[in-house]
Image (cartoon, rainbow, N blue to C red):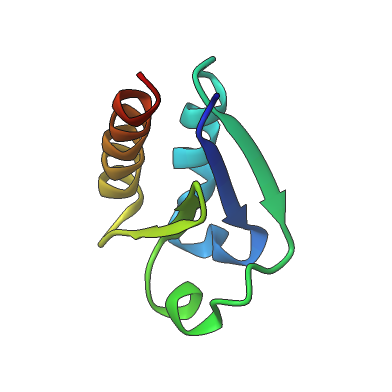
Length: 80
C-alpha cells in the first residue's frame, strides 16, 4: 500500500508546490491536491501536507520535502 500525500492548494505561497512536484515524480506514493484541508491555522503559518492523514509541517519547502521522504520511509517499514 502506497502512502497518501495530501496537500492544500492554498498553501502554495510557502513553496509547497515545488516540494509536491518532487514528490509526484516518485512512484512510491499517491499525491492528492485539495482546495482546503481544514487546517487553516497551520496552512497560514507553515508549509505542510498530510501523510497518511498525519500532519507534516516544516520551516520551508525544502525541509518539508525531506520530512515527507522520512514519513514515506516510515510508512514503508510499517507495511513491511
